[in-house]
Length: 265
Image (tube, rainbow, N blue to C red; front, top):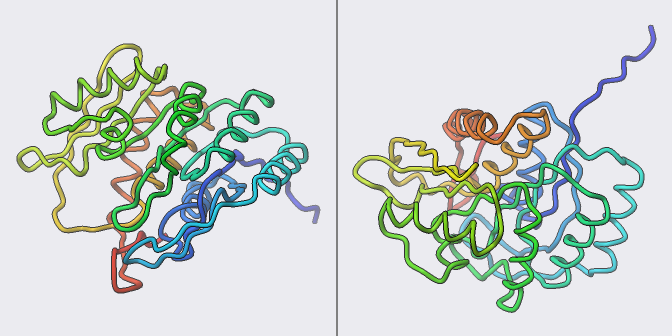
C-alpha cells in the first residue's frame, strides 16, 4: 500500500533554548505539533536555567544562526508563519530583520521577550533600538504588561493605562496589530487581554487565576497565534481561536522541578 503524503502548515520558530522544555524553542515546537502543524526552528541563544530562574545566557554565533536559517529556508521554501521569541543580541535581531525582508515572510508573530519572571535579561540593553525596527516588520506582537512597560518606559496600572499604552505602542513602533496581555494585572476578579487591530480595541476578559505561577505562557500564546494565522485566519478570528485554545491548554499543568509549574504538553 503506497504511503500517504500529509501536507501540514509549516511554522518557523526563532527563539531561545530553555532546557526545561517549559518555554522557548522546545515549548513552541510542542505547541505547534499539538495543533497539528509542523514546527521548524533555529535557536537564538542558549540558557542555563531550571524551573526556578535563568542563571546565564549564551549568545548563539551569528554566522551559525544566519547559515542555519538560510539553509533551512532554501530547502523548505514555503513557510506559512513565523513565531519569534527571545532574541538576546543586536546581531541576531539584525539577522532576523534581513531574513524577513529577503524572503518576504508573512504571518510573523513576535513575543518581545525582555526579561523572565526570575533571572537575568533575555535581551541585551543596547538591542532595544534594533527590536523596534523588527517590530515594524511583524504582523502582530504579543507583549505582556511588563514588556509593554519596558518598550514604552512607563508604568501600567489600570485598564485605561493598558488601552493608552496599546495606542502608543502602535504609533511608536509602527505596528498595526497588537495583543497586550493583562494576566499580571488583576482588576477585581478579572484580567484582560486587549487586541488592537483596524484602529480599534477588543477586550477579552478572563477570570483571574491566583497563584498559578506557570512558566512559558507567553511562548505558548504567541505560538498558538502563529498557527492560526498559518491556516489563513484573519487577525480577529486568530485572536479568539488563540484565546480559546490557550485557556484549554493552560488548564493542564504539572510540577517537574522546585520552581514554576510547566504546561503538560
